[in-house]
Length: 462
Length: 164
Image (tube, chains in turn brown, yellow):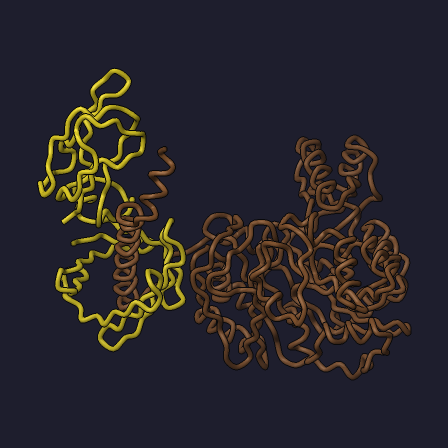
Protein backbone atom coordinates (compact mmCIF):
# COMPACT_ATOMS: atom_id res chain seq x y z
CA UNK A 1 0.00 0.00 0.00
CA UNK A 2 1.14 3.52 -0.65
CA UNK A 3 0.15 7.14 -0.20
CA UNK A 4 0.08 9.47 -3.19
CA UNK A 5 3.58 10.84 -2.54
CA UNK A 6 4.98 7.28 -2.37
CA UNK A 7 3.69 6.20 -5.78
CA UNK A 8 7.26 6.00 -7.16
CA UNK A 9 8.72 4.43 -3.98
CA UNK A 10 10.72 1.22 -4.23
CA UNK A 11 8.36 -0.72 -1.96
CA UNK A 12 5.57 -0.14 -4.48
CA UNK A 13 7.67 -1.26 -7.41
CA UNK A 14 9.07 -4.32 -5.63
CA UNK A 15 5.67 -5.52 -4.46
CA UNK A 16 3.49 -8.05 -6.31
CA UNK A 17 0.39 -5.98 -5.61
CA UNK A 18 0.02 -2.32 -4.68
CA UNK A 19 -2.98 -0.28 -3.59
CA UNK A 20 -3.29 3.47 -3.05
CA UNK A 21 -4.59 4.39 0.42
CA UNK A 22 -4.80 8.17 0.34
CA UNK A 23 -2.91 11.43 0.22
CA UNK A 24 0.53 12.19 1.63
CA UNK A 25 -0.68 13.43 5.01
CA UNK A 26 -0.21 10.45 7.39
CA UNK A 27 -3.73 10.81 8.84
CA UNK A 28 -5.16 10.33 5.36
CA UNK A 29 -3.12 7.22 4.59
CA UNK A 30 -0.62 5.34 6.78
CA UNK A 31 -2.41 6.29 10.01
CA UNK A 32 -5.86 5.61 8.60
CA UNK A 33 -6.67 2.22 10.13
CA UNK A 34 -10.07 1.86 8.46
CA UNK A 35 -8.68 2.46 4.99
CA UNK A 36 -5.73 0.10 5.52
CA UNK A 37 -8.00 -2.70 6.70
CA UNK A 38 -10.43 -2.13 3.81
CA UNK A 39 -7.55 -2.38 1.32
CA UNK A 40 -6.22 -5.52 3.04
CA UNK A 41 -9.66 -7.16 2.68
CA UNK A 42 -10.01 -6.06 -0.94
CA UNK A 43 -6.55 -7.41 -1.76
CA UNK A 44 -7.43 -10.78 -0.25
CA UNK A 45 -4.82 -10.57 2.52
CA UNK A 46 -4.95 -12.92 5.50
CA UNK A 47 -2.55 -10.91 7.68
CA UNK A 48 -1.30 -7.36 8.21
CA UNK A 49 2.34 -6.58 9.07
CA UNK A 50 2.46 -3.11 10.63
CA UNK A 51 6.13 -2.35 9.89
CA UNK A 52 8.00 -0.18 12.39
CA UNK A 53 6.38 3.23 12.23
CA UNK A 54 2.92 4.73 12.16
CA UNK A 55 0.40 2.19 13.56
CA UNK A 56 2.94 -0.50 14.54
CA UNK A 57 2.47 0.10 18.27
CA UNK A 58 -1.16 1.11 18.17
CA UNK A 59 -3.29 -1.32 20.20
CA UNK A 60 -6.55 -0.08 18.66
CA UNK A 61 -5.18 -0.88 15.21
CA UNK A 62 -4.09 -4.36 16.29
CA UNK A 63 -7.61 -4.91 17.68
CA UNK A 64 -9.28 -3.55 14.53
CA UNK A 65 -7.20 -5.89 12.37
CA UNK A 66 -8.20 -8.87 14.51
CA UNK A 67 -11.85 -7.78 14.52
CA UNK A 68 -11.77 -7.69 10.72
CA UNK A 69 -10.82 -11.37 10.71
CA UNK A 70 -7.20 -10.73 9.75
CA UNK A 71 -4.05 -11.80 11.58
CA UNK A 72 -2.02 -8.95 13.12
CA UNK A 73 1.70 -9.74 12.78
CA UNK A 74 2.78 -8.61 16.23
CA UNK A 75 1.68 -8.87 19.84
CA UNK A 76 -2.10 -8.86 20.42
CA UNK A 77 -3.87 -5.64 21.38
CA UNK A 78 -4.11 -6.47 25.08
CA UNK A 79 -0.34 -7.00 25.33
CA UNK A 80 0.29 -3.76 23.45
CA UNK A 81 -2.04 -1.92 25.82
CA UNK A 82 -0.37 -3.34 28.89
CA UNK A 83 3.18 -2.51 27.74
CA UNK A 84 2.28 0.62 25.78
CA UNK A 85 1.28 2.43 28.95
CA UNK A 86 4.79 3.08 30.22
CA UNK A 87 4.07 3.29 33.93
CA UNK A 88 2.10 0.02 33.79
CA UNK A 89 5.09 -1.57 32.04
CA UNK A 90 7.37 -0.30 34.83
CA UNK A 91 5.08 -1.86 37.45
CA UNK A 92 5.12 -5.15 35.55
CA UNK A 93 8.93 -5.11 35.38
CA UNK A 94 9.16 -4.53 39.14
CA UNK A 95 6.77 -7.44 39.77
CA UNK A 96 9.21 -9.82 38.04
CA UNK A 97 12.25 -8.37 39.86
CA UNK A 98 13.61 -6.29 37.00
CA UNK A 99 15.10 -3.01 38.27
CA UNK A 100 13.56 0.25 37.04
CA UNK A 101 14.87 3.81 37.41
CA UNK A 102 13.34 5.87 40.26
CA UNK A 103 10.15 7.36 38.92
CA UNK A 104 6.48 8.07 39.34
CA UNK A 105 3.06 7.01 38.17
CA UNK A 106 1.26 9.31 35.68
CA UNK A 107 1.04 12.77 37.22
CA UNK A 108 -2.07 14.91 37.67
CA UNK A 109 -0.68 18.40 37.17
CA UNK A 110 2.44 20.56 37.08
CA UNK A 111 2.43 21.23 40.83
CA UNK A 112 2.32 17.54 41.79
CA UNK A 113 4.94 16.76 39.15
CA UNK A 114 7.25 19.49 40.37
CA UNK A 115 7.03 18.21 43.93
CA UNK A 116 7.85 14.70 42.70
CA UNK A 117 10.80 16.01 40.69
CA UNK A 118 12.24 17.64 43.79
CA UNK A 119 11.95 14.36 45.67
CA UNK A 120 13.67 12.32 42.92
CA UNK A 121 16.32 15.00 42.42
CA UNK A 122 17.28 16.88 39.27
CA UNK A 123 17.96 16.22 36.46
CA UNK A 124 14.74 14.37 35.73
CA UNK A 125 13.12 13.04 32.58
CA UNK A 126 9.59 14.05 31.73
CA UNK A 127 8.10 11.24 29.67
CA UNK A 128 4.78 10.61 27.95
CA UNK A 129 3.02 7.66 29.59
CA UNK A 130 1.29 6.87 26.32
CA UNK A 131 4.22 6.14 24.08
CA UNK A 132 7.95 5.79 23.62
CA UNK A 133 10.55 6.13 20.94
CA UNK A 134 11.90 9.34 22.44
CA UNK A 135 9.01 11.47 21.20
CA UNK A 136 7.76 14.11 23.62
CA UNK A 137 10.56 13.34 26.06
CA UNK A 138 12.12 16.24 27.99
CA UNK A 139 15.12 16.51 30.26
CA UNK A 140 14.63 19.04 33.04
CA UNK A 141 17.79 20.18 34.77
CA UNK A 142 16.47 22.75 37.26
CA UNK A 143 13.38 23.47 39.28
CA UNK A 144 12.85 26.85 37.59
CA UNK A 145 12.72 25.20 34.15
CA UNK A 146 10.06 22.73 35.22
CA UNK A 147 6.82 24.49 34.32
CA UNK A 148 7.68 25.40 30.70
CA UNK A 149 9.02 21.87 30.15
CA UNK A 150 5.79 20.42 31.55
CA UNK A 151 3.69 22.54 29.19
CA UNK A 152 5.87 21.66 26.18
CA UNK A 153 5.92 17.94 26.95
CA UNK A 154 2.15 17.85 27.51
CA UNK A 155 1.61 19.39 24.08
CA UNK A 156 4.05 17.04 22.37
CA UNK A 157 2.62 13.97 24.07
CA UNK A 158 -0.88 14.94 22.98
CA UNK A 159 0.29 15.49 19.40
CA UNK A 160 2.34 12.29 19.18
CA UNK A 161 0.23 9.82 21.13
CA UNK A 162 -3.18 11.45 21.48
CA UNK A 163 -2.91 11.57 25.27
CA UNK A 164 -1.28 14.17 27.49
CA UNK A 165 -0.36 11.95 30.46
CA UNK A 166 3.23 12.37 31.67
CA UNK A 167 5.38 10.71 34.30
CA UNK A 168 8.82 11.35 35.75
CA UNK A 169 11.98 9.32 35.82
CA UNK A 170 15.43 9.94 37.28
CA UNK A 171 17.80 11.00 34.50
CA UNK A 172 20.71 8.58 34.34
CA UNK A 173 23.79 10.43 33.14
CA UNK A 174 26.40 8.83 30.86
CA UNK A 175 24.21 5.79 30.46
CA UNK A 176 24.22 3.40 27.56
CA UNK A 177 21.07 2.48 25.74
CA UNK A 178 21.10 -1.31 25.50
CA UNK A 179 18.16 -3.25 24.14
CA UNK A 180 17.42 -6.94 24.05
CA UNK A 181 15.69 -8.60 21.10
CA UNK A 182 13.10 -11.16 22.07
CA UNK A 183 10.89 -13.55 20.14
CA UNK A 184 7.87 -15.35 21.53
CA UNK A 185 5.54 -17.87 19.92
CA UNK A 186 1.87 -18.33 20.69
CA UNK A 187 2.62 -21.54 22.64
CA UNK A 188 4.29 -19.75 25.56
CA UNK A 189 7.91 -20.10 24.48
CA UNK A 190 10.07 -16.96 24.74
CA UNK A 191 13.72 -16.62 23.71
CA UNK A 192 16.22 -13.74 23.66
CA UNK A 193 18.44 -13.28 20.61
CA UNK A 194 21.03 -10.79 21.83
CA UNK A 195 21.50 -7.14 22.68
CA UNK A 196 22.09 -4.02 20.62
CA UNK A 197 23.85 -0.92 21.89
CA UNK A 198 21.92 2.07 20.52
CA UNK A 199 23.63 4.86 22.46
CA UNK A 200 24.58 6.91 19.40
CA UNK A 201 21.45 9.05 19.27
CA UNK A 202 20.44 12.61 18.57
CA UNK A 203 17.21 13.96 20.03
CA UNK A 204 16.65 10.40 21.35
CA UNK A 205 16.62 9.05 17.78
CA UNK A 206 19.21 6.40 16.96
CA UNK A 207 21.94 6.89 14.31
CA UNK A 208 24.26 3.91 14.90
CA UNK A 209 23.50 0.56 16.54
CA UNK A 210 25.74 -2.39 17.16
CA UNK A 211 25.87 -5.87 18.61
CA UNK A 212 27.43 -7.14 20.76
CA UNK A 213 27.45 -4.01 22.90
CA UNK A 214 31.13 -3.18 23.47
CA UNK A 215 30.49 -2.70 27.19
CA UNK A 216 28.29 -5.76 27.67
CA UNK A 217 29.93 -8.67 29.45
CA UNK A 218 28.74 -12.26 29.05
CA UNK A 219 27.28 -12.01 32.56
CA UNK A 220 25.36 -8.79 31.89
CA UNK A 221 24.07 -10.17 28.58
CA UNK A 222 22.64 -13.23 30.30
CA UNK A 223 21.03 -11.02 32.98
CA UNK A 224 19.47 -8.68 30.42
CA UNK A 225 18.24 -11.65 28.39
CA UNK A 226 16.68 -13.31 31.42
CA UNK A 227 15.07 -10.02 32.54
CA UNK A 228 13.60 -9.46 29.06
CA UNK A 229 12.20 -12.99 28.96
CA UNK A 230 10.61 -12.59 32.45
CA UNK A 231 8.88 -9.38 31.35
CA UNK A 232 7.67 -10.97 28.11
CA UNK A 233 6.36 -14.06 29.91
CA UNK A 234 4.49 -12.00 32.50
CA UNK A 235 2.94 -9.85 29.74
CA UNK A 236 1.86 -12.88 27.70
CA UNK A 237 4.00 -11.60 24.85
CA UNK A 238 3.72 -13.02 21.32
CA UNK A 239 5.93 -12.28 18.28
CA UNK A 240 9.05 -10.08 17.99
CA UNK A 241 9.76 -7.34 20.50
CA UNK A 242 12.51 -5.35 22.11
CA UNK A 243 13.08 -4.69 25.78
CA UNK A 244 15.07 -1.50 26.34
CA UNK A 245 17.42 -0.85 29.25
CA UNK A 246 19.65 1.97 30.41
CA UNK A 247 22.94 0.61 31.67
CA UNK A 248 25.02 2.74 34.01
CA UNK A 249 28.80 2.92 33.98
CA UNK A 250 28.99 0.44 36.87
CA UNK A 251 26.91 -2.15 34.99
CA UNK A 252 23.73 -1.44 36.97
CA UNK A 253 20.79 -1.69 34.56
CA UNK A 254 17.30 -0.24 34.64
CA UNK A 255 14.29 -1.27 32.57
CA UNK A 256 13.20 1.50 30.20
CA UNK A 257 10.34 0.25 28.04
CA UNK A 258 9.20 -2.48 25.67
CA UNK A 259 8.87 -1.75 21.96
CA UNK A 260 6.05 -4.03 20.89
CA UNK A 261 7.13 -4.32 17.27
CA UNK A 262 10.02 -5.01 14.94
CA UNK A 263 12.67 -2.29 15.23
CA UNK A 264 14.46 -0.34 12.54
CA UNK A 265 17.77 -1.83 13.73
CA UNK A 266 16.64 -5.49 13.58
CA UNK A 267 19.18 -6.29 10.79
CA UNK A 268 21.98 -6.05 13.38
CA UNK A 269 20.51 -9.05 15.17
CA UNK A 270 19.67 -10.81 11.90
CA UNK A 271 23.28 -10.82 10.66
CA UNK A 272 24.62 -11.86 14.08
CA UNK A 273 22.19 -14.78 14.49
CA UNK A 274 21.59 -15.65 10.84
CA UNK A 275 17.81 -15.49 11.37
CA UNK A 276 15.33 -13.67 9.17
CA UNK A 277 13.26 -11.94 11.85
CA UNK A 278 10.45 -10.93 9.50
CA UNK A 279 10.09 -14.51 8.26
CA UNK A 280 10.00 -15.69 11.89
CA UNK A 281 7.35 -13.05 12.66
CA UNK A 282 5.19 -14.51 9.90
CA UNK A 283 5.68 -18.07 11.17
CA UNK A 284 4.74 -17.02 14.70
CA UNK A 285 1.71 -15.14 13.38
CA UNK A 286 0.67 -18.31 11.55
CA UNK A 287 0.68 -20.14 14.88
CA UNK A 288 3.87 -22.14 14.34
CA UNK A 289 6.12 -22.86 17.32
CA UNK A 290 9.59 -21.27 17.31
CA UNK A 291 11.86 -23.59 15.28
CA UNK A 292 14.75 -23.40 17.78
CA UNK A 293 15.45 -23.32 21.50
CA UNK A 294 17.41 -20.74 23.49
CA UNK A 295 20.48 -22.99 23.44
CA UNK A 296 20.39 -23.33 19.66
CA UNK A 297 20.81 -19.58 19.08
CA UNK A 298 24.39 -18.92 17.99
CA UNK A 299 25.68 -15.37 17.74
CA UNK A 300 28.61 -14.90 15.40
CA UNK A 301 30.98 -11.95 15.21
CA UNK A 302 29.99 -8.31 15.44
CA UNK A 303 27.58 -6.14 13.49
CA UNK A 304 27.06 -2.38 13.14
CA UNK A 305 24.22 -0.49 11.52
CA UNK A 306 24.30 3.12 10.32
CA UNK A 307 20.98 4.78 9.68
CA UNK A 308 21.48 7.12 6.75
CA UNK A 309 18.92 9.87 7.18
CA UNK A 310 17.98 13.00 5.24
CA UNK A 311 19.37 15.29 7.91
CA UNK A 312 22.21 17.78 7.84
CA UNK A 313 24.87 16.98 10.45
CA UNK A 314 26.61 20.30 9.68
CA UNK A 315 23.45 22.15 10.70
CA UNK A 316 22.31 20.45 13.89
CA UNK A 317 20.74 17.48 12.06
CA UNK A 318 17.84 19.49 10.67
CA UNK A 319 15.73 17.32 8.37
CA UNK A 320 15.98 17.92 4.63
CA UNK A 321 13.72 16.99 1.77
CA UNK A 322 14.12 17.28 -1.96
CA UNK A 323 15.33 15.46 -5.02
CA UNK A 324 18.07 12.87 -4.85
CA UNK A 325 20.30 13.52 -7.86
CA UNK A 326 22.60 10.54 -7.53
CA UNK A 327 22.93 7.38 -5.44
CA UNK A 328 25.60 4.74 -5.26
CA UNK A 329 25.27 2.11 -2.59
CA UNK A 330 28.14 0.12 -1.11
CA UNK A 331 28.54 -3.63 -1.47
CA UNK A 332 31.10 -6.34 -0.85
CA UNK A 333 31.94 -8.81 1.90
CA UNK A 334 29.95 -8.39 5.07
CA UNK A 335 27.93 -5.43 3.81
CA UNK A 336 24.15 -5.33 3.68
CA UNK A 337 22.15 -2.30 2.55
CA UNK A 338 18.41 -1.97 3.27
CA UNK A 339 17.48 1.07 1.25
CA UNK A 340 14.63 3.14 -0.11
CA UNK A 341 16.97 5.26 -2.25
CA UNK A 342 17.08 5.69 -6.01
CA UNK A 343 18.41 8.42 -8.29
CA UNK A 344 15.73 10.92 -9.14
CA UNK A 345 13.54 10.15 -6.13
CA UNK A 346 11.99 12.94 -4.15
CA UNK A 347 12.41 12.62 -0.40
CA UNK A 348 8.99 13.64 0.91
CA UNK A 349 8.77 16.08 3.77
CA UNK A 350 5.75 14.22 5.19
CA UNK A 351 7.58 11.22 6.66
CA UNK A 352 10.54 10.09 8.75
CA UNK A 353 13.96 11.07 7.41
CA UNK A 354 15.31 7.49 7.20
CA UNK A 355 16.70 6.79 3.71
CA UNK A 356 18.81 3.66 4.04
CA UNK A 357 20.47 1.34 6.54
CA UNK A 358 24.01 0.15 6.00
CA UNK A 359 24.88 -2.94 8.03
CA UNK A 360 28.42 -4.30 8.35
CA UNK A 361 29.20 -7.75 9.74
CA UNK A 362 32.65 -8.97 10.72
CA UNK A 363 34.24 -11.79 12.69
CA UNK A 364 34.90 -9.27 15.43
CA UNK A 365 34.18 -5.59 16.13
CA UNK A 366 37.41 -4.41 14.54
CA UNK A 367 36.58 -6.14 11.27
CA UNK A 368 33.01 -4.82 11.34
CA UNK A 369 34.28 -1.27 11.87
CA UNK A 370 36.77 -1.64 9.01
CA UNK A 371 34.09 -2.91 6.67
CA UNK A 372 31.67 -0.17 7.69
CA UNK A 373 34.32 2.52 7.11
CA UNK A 374 35.02 1.17 3.67
CA UNK A 375 31.29 0.95 2.88
CA UNK A 376 30.59 4.52 3.99
CA UNK A 377 33.50 5.80 1.90
CA UNK A 378 32.05 3.98 -1.13
CA UNK A 379 28.57 5.35 -0.66
CA UNK A 380 27.45 8.42 -2.63
CA UNK A 381 24.26 10.39 -2.15
CA UNK A 382 23.88 13.78 -3.82
CA UNK A 383 21.10 16.32 -4.08
CA UNK A 384 20.20 16.54 -0.41
CA UNK A 385 22.28 16.65 2.76
CA UNK A 386 22.42 13.35 4.65
CA UNK A 387 23.79 12.03 7.93
CA UNK A 388 26.64 10.27 6.08
CA UNK A 389 29.35 12.79 7.11
CA UNK A 390 28.49 12.16 10.76
CA UNK A 391 28.73 8.39 10.46
CA UNK A 392 31.96 8.57 8.47
CA UNK A 393 33.45 10.68 11.25
CA UNK A 394 32.01 8.55 14.05
CA UNK A 395 33.44 5.32 12.64
CA UNK A 396 36.91 6.89 12.87
CA UNK A 397 36.32 8.58 16.22
CA UNK A 398 38.78 7.38 18.82
CA UNK A 399 36.15 6.92 21.53
CA UNK A 400 33.80 5.06 19.23
CA UNK A 401 36.54 2.77 17.99
CA UNK A 402 37.55 2.09 21.59
CA UNK A 403 33.91 1.32 22.44
CA UNK A 404 33.81 4.18 24.94
CA UNK A 405 30.64 6.05 24.16
CA UNK A 406 27.25 6.82 25.67
CA UNK A 407 24.03 8.64 24.83
CA UNK A 408 25.85 12.00 24.93
CA UNK A 409 28.10 11.13 21.95
CA UNK A 410 26.21 13.05 19.25
CA UNK A 411 25.72 16.12 21.44
CA UNK A 412 29.48 16.25 22.04
CA UNK A 413 30.34 15.70 18.35
CA UNK A 414 31.52 18.60 16.17
CA UNK A 415 32.22 18.49 12.44
CA UNK A 416 35.94 18.51 11.76
CA UNK A 417 37.76 19.61 8.64
CA UNK A 418 38.47 16.97 6.03
CA UNK A 419 42.01 15.64 6.00
CA UNK A 420 42.73 15.67 2.26
CA UNK A 421 45.87 14.66 0.40
CA UNK A 422 47.24 17.20 -2.09
CA UNK A 423 45.78 15.21 -4.96
CA UNK A 424 42.37 15.10 -3.29
CA UNK A 425 42.51 18.82 -2.56
CA UNK A 426 43.46 19.65 -6.17
CA UNK A 427 40.67 17.42 -7.46
CA UNK A 428 38.18 18.90 -5.01
CA UNK A 429 39.14 22.41 -6.10
CA UNK A 430 38.77 21.53 -9.78
CA UNK A 431 35.45 19.81 -9.11
CA UNK A 432 34.19 22.81 -7.13
CA UNK A 433 35.02 25.19 -10.00
CA UNK A 434 33.46 22.90 -12.61
CA UNK A 435 30.35 22.49 -10.49
CA UNK A 436 29.96 26.21 -10.04
CA UNK A 437 30.52 26.86 -13.75
CA UNK A 438 28.03 24.27 -14.95
CA UNK A 439 25.50 25.60 -12.55
CA UNK A 440 25.91 29.23 -13.54
CA UNK A 441 25.77 28.30 -17.21
CA UNK A 442 22.69 26.21 -16.73
CA UNK A 443 20.97 28.92 -14.74
CA UNK A 444 21.80 31.43 -17.46
CA UNK A 445 20.38 29.09 -20.07
CA UNK A 446 17.28 28.44 -18.04
CA UNK A 447 16.57 32.07 -17.35
CA UNK A 448 17.75 33.72 -20.53
CA UNK A 449 17.70 31.39 -23.49
CA UNK A 450 15.12 28.78 -22.61
CA UNK A 451 12.04 29.55 -24.73
CA UNK A 452 9.71 27.83 -22.23
CA UNK A 453 11.07 29.87 -19.37
CA UNK A 454 10.64 32.97 -21.49
CA UNK A 455 7.08 32.06 -22.37
CA UNK A 456 6.34 31.27 -18.73
CA UNK A 457 7.71 34.62 -17.68
CA UNK A 458 5.72 36.42 -20.35
CA UNK A 459 2.57 34.71 -19.07
CA UNK A 460 3.38 35.62 -15.50
CA UNK A 461 3.77 39.26 -16.42
CA UNK A 462 0.51 39.50 -18.29
CA UNK B 1 39.28 32.46 -15.56
CA UNK B 2 40.84 32.40 -12.11
CA UNK B 3 39.09 31.15 -9.01
CA UNK B 4 39.77 31.00 -5.34
CA UNK B 5 38.38 27.86 -3.78
CA UNK B 6 38.13 27.14 -0.08
CA UNK B 7 37.94 23.54 1.10
CA UNK B 8 37.02 23.69 4.77
CA UNK B 9 39.88 25.86 6.08
CA UNK B 10 42.19 25.36 3.11
CA UNK B 11 42.53 27.79 0.17
CA UNK B 12 43.36 26.63 -3.34
CA UNK B 13 43.83 28.88 -6.42
CA UNK B 14 42.55 27.39 -9.65
CA UNK B 15 42.72 28.71 -13.19
CA UNK B 16 40.71 27.30 -16.06
CA UNK B 17 42.44 28.13 -19.33
CA UNK B 18 40.47 28.69 -22.51
CA UNK B 19 42.30 25.70 -24.00
CA UNK B 20 40.90 23.37 -21.33
CA UNK B 21 44.11 23.38 -19.27
CA UNK B 22 44.02 23.66 -15.50
CA UNK B 23 46.35 25.47 -13.21
CA UNK B 24 46.25 24.64 -9.51
CA UNK B 25 48.34 26.86 -7.24
CA UNK B 26 50.05 28.28 -10.37
CA UNK B 27 51.18 24.83 -11.52
CA UNK B 28 49.77 23.43 -14.73
CA UNK B 29 48.24 20.06 -13.89
CA UNK B 30 47.76 17.24 -16.31
CA UNK B 31 44.26 16.32 -15.24
CA UNK B 32 42.15 13.86 -17.15
CA UNK B 33 38.67 15.08 -16.21
CA UNK B 34 35.45 13.26 -17.08
CA UNK B 35 32.02 14.47 -16.13
CA UNK B 36 30.41 11.19 -15.02
CA UNK B 37 27.05 12.66 -13.97
CA UNK B 38 26.12 15.95 -15.57
CA UNK B 39 26.83 18.87 -13.30
CA UNK B 40 27.14 16.50 -10.31
CA UNK B 41 30.13 14.25 -10.46
CA UNK B 42 33.57 14.27 -12.01
CA UNK B 43 36.19 11.57 -12.27
CA UNK B 44 39.60 13.22 -12.14
CA UNK B 45 42.82 11.34 -12.86
CA UNK B 46 45.82 13.36 -11.70
CA UNK B 47 49.26 11.91 -12.42
CA UNK B 48 48.04 8.37 -11.90
CA UNK B 49 45.88 9.19 -8.87
CA UNK B 50 42.19 8.58 -9.42
CA UNK B 51 39.79 10.90 -7.62
CA UNK B 52 36.06 11.32 -7.67
CA UNK B 53 34.33 14.57 -6.78
CA UNK B 54 30.58 14.59 -6.16
CA UNK B 55 28.54 17.72 -5.51
CA UNK B 56 26.37 16.74 -2.57
CA UNK B 57 24.57 20.10 -2.44
CA UNK B 58 25.12 23.31 -4.43
CA UNK B 59 23.89 25.78 -1.87
CA UNK B 60 25.76 25.59 0.44
CA UNK B 61 28.44 23.91 -1.67
CA UNK B 62 29.26 20.52 -0.13
CA UNK B 63 31.50 18.04 -1.85
CA UNK B 64 32.21 14.36 -1.44
CA UNK B 65 35.82 13.78 -2.44
CA UNK B 66 36.71 10.09 -2.48
CA UNK B 67 34.37 9.62 0.49
CA UNK B 68 35.57 12.69 2.41
CA UNK B 69 33.05 15.41 3.20
CA UNK B 70 34.19 18.91 2.32
CA UNK B 71 32.47 22.26 2.73
CA UNK B 72 33.60 24.42 -0.18
CA UNK B 73 33.22 27.91 -1.61
CA UNK B 74 34.21 29.23 -5.03
CA UNK B 75 34.91 32.87 -5.81
CA UNK B 76 35.95 34.02 -9.27
CA UNK B 77 38.45 36.79 -10.03
CA UNK B 78 35.84 39.46 -10.75
CA UNK B 79 34.08 38.84 -7.48
CA UNK B 80 37.47 38.84 -5.76
CA UNK B 81 38.38 42.17 -7.37
CA UNK B 82 35.04 43.64 -6.43
CA UNK B 83 35.77 42.63 -2.88
CA UNK B 84 32.74 40.43 -2.75
CA UNK B 85 32.72 37.55 -0.34
CA UNK B 86 32.27 33.93 -1.18
CA UNK B 87 28.96 34.28 -2.91
CA UNK B 88 29.75 32.04 -5.83
CA UNK B 89 31.23 32.40 -9.27
CA UNK B 90 29.82 34.97 -11.60
CA UNK B 91 30.37 33.34 -14.92
CA UNK B 92 28.13 33.12 -17.94
CA UNK B 93 25.33 35.55 -18.55
CA UNK B 94 23.90 38.16 -16.25
CA UNK B 95 20.57 39.88 -16.62
CA UNK B 96 19.64 43.43 -15.84
CA UNK B 97 16.03 43.35 -14.70
CA UNK B 98 13.62 46.18 -14.03
CA UNK B 99 13.56 46.61 -10.24
CA UNK B 100 10.06 48.11 -10.40
CA UNK B 101 7.39 48.74 -13.04
CA UNK B 102 7.92 51.94 -15.03
CA UNK B 103 8.74 53.68 -18.27
CA UNK B 104 12.09 52.99 -19.86
CA UNK B 105 13.30 56.52 -20.62
CA UNK B 106 16.63 55.68 -22.24
CA UNK B 107 19.06 52.88 -23.04
CA UNK B 108 22.64 54.11 -22.92
CA UNK B 109 24.36 51.12 -24.57
CA UNK B 110 24.02 49.07 -27.72
CA UNK B 111 24.53 45.37 -28.40
CA UNK B 112 28.21 44.48 -28.64
CA UNK B 113 29.37 47.24 -26.28
CA UNK B 114 31.89 46.32 -23.60
CA UNK B 115 30.90 47.65 -20.21
CA UNK B 116 32.45 47.76 -16.76
CA UNK B 117 30.60 46.71 -13.64
CA UNK B 118 28.35 49.54 -12.42
CA UNK B 119 28.34 51.26 -15.82
CA UNK B 120 25.14 53.24 -16.50
CA UNK B 121 23.02 51.05 -18.83
CA UNK B 122 19.51 52.49 -18.79
CA UNK B 123 17.21 55.02 -17.18
CA UNK B 124 13.90 53.89 -15.78
CA UNK B 125 11.22 56.35 -14.79
CA UNK B 126 9.15 55.02 -11.95
CA UNK B 127 7.33 56.50 -8.99
CA UNK B 128 7.94 59.91 -10.54
CA UNK B 129 11.68 59.53 -10.35
CA UNK B 130 14.35 58.73 -12.85
CA UNK B 131 16.39 55.73 -11.77
CA UNK B 132 19.76 54.89 -13.26
CA UNK B 133 20.13 51.16 -13.81
CA UNK B 134 23.77 50.01 -13.50
CA UNK B 135 25.56 46.97 -14.90
CA UNK B 136 25.49 44.12 -12.36
CA UNK B 137 28.85 42.92 -13.72
CA UNK B 138 31.36 43.63 -16.45
CA UNK B 139 31.02 42.09 -19.91
CA UNK B 140 29.71 42.52 -23.40
CA UNK B 141 26.12 43.60 -24.04
CA UNK B 142 24.64 40.44 -25.56
CA UNK B 143 21.02 41.46 -25.91
CA UNK B 144 18.84 44.50 -25.40
CA UNK B 145 15.32 43.36 -24.79
CA UNK B 146 13.47 46.62 -24.30
CA UNK B 147 13.58 49.89 -26.23
CA UNK B 148 13.40 53.45 -24.93
CA UNK B 149 9.80 54.50 -24.50
CA UNK B 150 8.58 51.02 -23.49
CA UNK B 151 6.51 50.37 -20.40
CA UNK B 152 8.09 47.54 -18.43
CA UNK B 153 6.88 45.33 -15.60
CA UNK B 154 8.86 44.63 -12.44
CA UNK B 155 11.29 41.78 -13.06
CA UNK B 156 11.31 42.16 -16.83
CA UNK B 157 14.68 41.42 -18.41
CA UNK B 158 15.97 44.61 -20.02
CA UNK B 159 19.55 43.80 -20.95
CA UNK B 160 21.66 40.64 -20.97
CA UNK B 161 25.40 40.85 -20.36
CA UNK B 162 27.76 38.05 -21.35
CA UNK B 163 30.88 37.88 -19.23
CA UNK B 164 34.20 37.44 -21.00
